[in-house]
Length: 257
Image (cartoon, rainbow, N blue to C red; front, side, top):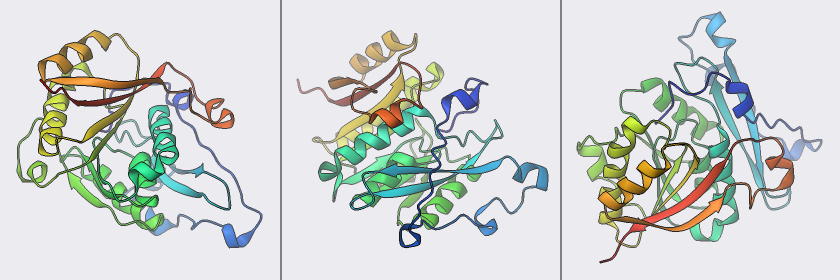
């Protein structure tokens, strides 16, 4: 779910990794005026920016263009947890190829877009009430030339969209930031995991004071953590140097009793 109440010091948590390619054959599609929010005033459009994120080499990799909106109420920022999860997807690309992937609280959707680029069938989801976020998802899919399903899905709400999903892999970047939403999130994750018993929830999050609550809710919903990594342990140095925070990556599955 896109954040509306995160730390006001947003710039320290954003990686705007702009690079230019000398070879025009490798140049990525630019973001034009039609890709921005057409209903915004000129002042609001000044708050819209873009960032470029690179994976792999020029020979065997790709880049992802992201539209970001710096207005706090949109919550459309590329947070460090998203960059780390996207890198993990890239490094595990053989695992994601041909997988059925759902990203929860996708926001700017960087991890899901990387999954789509490496061959996954991806559904991007965010709060059904955040229409501007869902619209932004469609824009970034078009800009990056990927076909993803975009779906409004509110955690803990059992309406038609959630019943249509049957993922092998569930992604969630920085979805564990508001303790008030933890129970609804884990309820939704558990439901999706139960639909595909061999599926996994892969999430990156800041190791905040809510860690014990996360452990409690995992036990409540019959989940277990099978992998826990320091988020910086697998990051390339040039990317890690632009990020900060105590970020962990966890793989969570249903506990077999």
